[in-house]
Length: 149
Image (cartoon, rainbow, N blue to C red; front, side):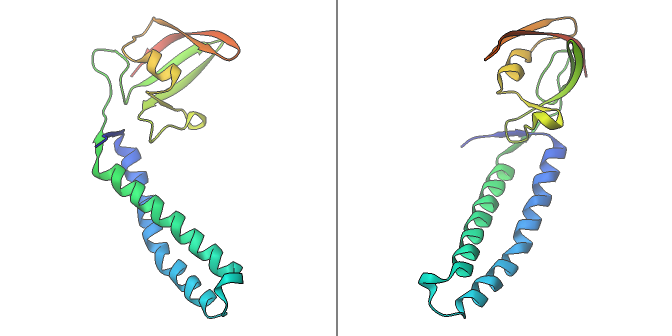
């Protein structure tokens, strides 16, 4: 059994998504019933599309329920060291702010960096003033840790 590290905010987002998915079950079932009424199911594109949507919806429901059942809420680092839940400001030319989160919540474009990513794992345990160098396809990149919250 895997534990999923998520923030309280991430847990709330998953709970909201789960509610939307559960609410959409009835609508999908109605579309399947309507498409079934058209007759021959072997050549019924509407039926196939509705069944595919139902399958994807149910898979995501099961995935979210599993994450929520095995969620470990993360808080943040102690003693100024970077840990899950920490917000860090890094400098590499420009300054960039990231929140270190578990892989389930990661979204680098939204400033949420996975602790399992190359940069996220290199940052773990570092503190303000430290430098971190990671290898990228374009070569090595060095970041200076400007602050940790």
